[in-house]
Image 1 (cartoon, rainbow, N blue to C red):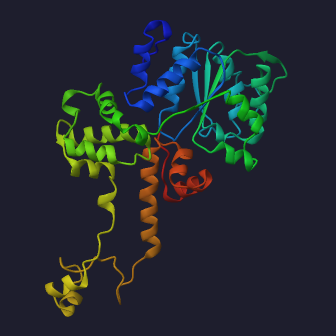
Image 2 (cartoon, rainbow, N blue to C red):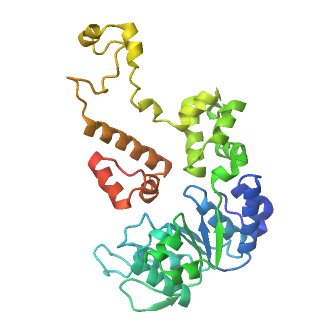
Length: 359
């Protein structure tokens, strides 16, 4: 992504970061311009895959800190025992594996911006330490007692309902007020479908001509009627999938429907209705040739032909785990949300099936 600040393009630069002309996108750009003028902490709320990190980057690039560092940290992707070191740094020998002094993101981003993504996944004890940093503008490295001043702007993001998390005692209310001096809603892709053609052109911009797909009118209607649970991230993956499988082609509605649901072809076929089977063959013929073309699907329960239900369920579960990880770009906490599972539960299932986390 090109790094351009307020003095190097202004409005044009912002429109190259936040793509689209829908009312929702125009309102978002206007809010970015307003909050960029200050150093207030900003909390970005919105569904996963909607582009919250891109919005955070736009706020940084439009503000007075644009010439300084921008650090993005996914709080849900860092093991709980390492997040303090990641944010605040550590001294040599402060814990096993600390072979040298290390600056944390807050010190390394002095004068710039720190973006804390998935802040709702942060451990409760770390929330207390982060609150102190925000209030005092100081940090202490792990294994040190020396207090160091830091000057960074903090932008955070979450897809979670923090009001519910506060009510359940999982998130500190005082930290929420500190992080959310300004709360900015990032719209879902489904609420700005008018931007889909422009987003597709944007994702295809760096592709060679022979890899770019075209979409006829009916195909575009299908795209604009899709729910887009993975939002802009899902659209980006869709465009890449289409270029790999149909580069240079013009796609219709059926092509798009299959690309939007790539596991549909793996789903078990429906059993042929018994009335149709009766026309094709007698019961005796079916018994002699259970895999004939007119026979019911082999996995349909029948006397003398049981199915392994546990294995069938595991097959479906494995397919959905792969789909969720693909939509989430390999981020386990996001994939777990899409599957309505706890993060630890998804990790256990991935180990069970030998699924590796994508890089």
